[in-house]
Image (cartoon, rainbow, N blue to C red; front, top):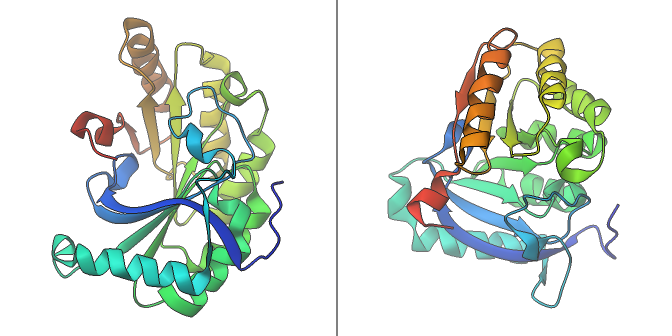
Length: 239
């Protein structure tokens, strides 16, 4: 676990406006809050600068971060077209900072912004603290071939806690093994076959493409809502 001195102070890599590029909410406008620090090291990570707390990270109090989020919202208010603005907590790994996020949600964001958590799903007891204040939970299933750890026990517990608000994303790379994808499908379906699953290719080479199509076929036998969806923000050339 990454430690920080004050539970109401957190290191932030960046805060910015963009459009969600992954999962079942792809395309919606959001304000992104990227935390610094992660408890995993995935070989396909596309935000390596946020893995560690470094000199580029700025520590925020909950009040200061709320004011920053509000400023960015005011600058982009017209892009939400009157809809309730959504704040995506991402990283790094935001569930490391759940005490900070809880105060932010309870004290400042409630009734003003909807809350969207993007997490690696490895810290179920942490997400339990903020679940009631989250509107959407986007959980990655992390394979041992990518991060070097078997996390299925943690993932199952995480899904049991968050199943009414969660969708799952699996990143499929050249070295993703069929047996671990099958285990992911079984883990999800044992909790609920109604949890949406996004199969996200890490690249567009022939090996990965063939894997993605085969894995989709496997998943359809146990899960009702499945989609193949790449990272759209990369295709759009946006953050």
